[in-house]
Image 1 (tube, one colour):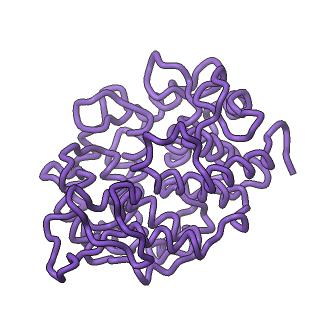
Image 2 (image 1 turned 120 degrees about the horizontal axis):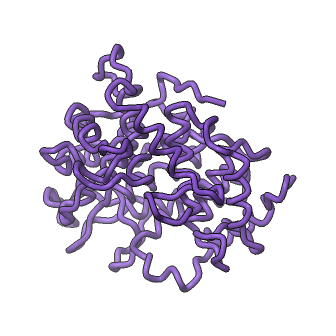
Image 3 (image 1 turned 180 degrees about the vertical axis):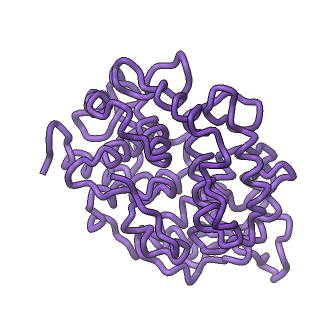
Length: 361
């Protein structure tokens, strides 16, 4: 049942539509198709509507995007990143077992995270995941400063891909692909003078980077069994400054901005709402005003727009707007394992969640 203006039925229709056929405007995002599928499937899980997903066909499609470690001739592709590619757009032939890497092809950390999240949501047992090759690739992708590159061919490295690597470690329950000490040092160095976190040390604090930093730090200190249990993750950062910075990102219209002097944006309901939840101070921001902002960005076709004055919804902001409502406790929505980006239902079945997080109200 819809409640207080939240149009759950329309959101179900919207995300099911996005899962079946993306509009032409998404053509430029073809290489990220796996992430688009993650947004739609995770959203339907939050909406308690996984019955709308053809699970077996979807699982086979995801495995079809796995980068196999051997060449067609049987040799090793040691120069490639293993895991999952974002789409078959470069001419990869479909096979339910995955495909060998082509020239300028390989797995991507963000796409691998998306693939494993989808498989977890749909209840797959990861029996066909090339675990050892993913972990071996991650060891090669971690940089001397502790950050991660997304692929062997892409030398950008920052907090986004560090979070992906940490989340993959939890999903696979295998931490051998990560030097956690170096990763934590990178996170701690990235806290800025005003309390938030930048994508890298010395860069401006940003809501998305702050979420990635806190989620990764929380996952490492709670689930990496090599991490000393006596070291609480909040002792490693300045929580007071972080609290002030995050709370100051709520604008007068109720939404959250990603940086100072920027307009409020739907997706930061999750990035900053989730950050505040992780440090257990989400009761300090105005939740009613955030709800009002999100309702103003809700569109009549279902989904959410980036800003309230934009006419059309998009899948990314629709997903994170829905996550914002879940964090606000919207009736009928499943609660999130917000540091991992999937529902608590899906996360609770992961072997890596052997030490349970106690979620706040």
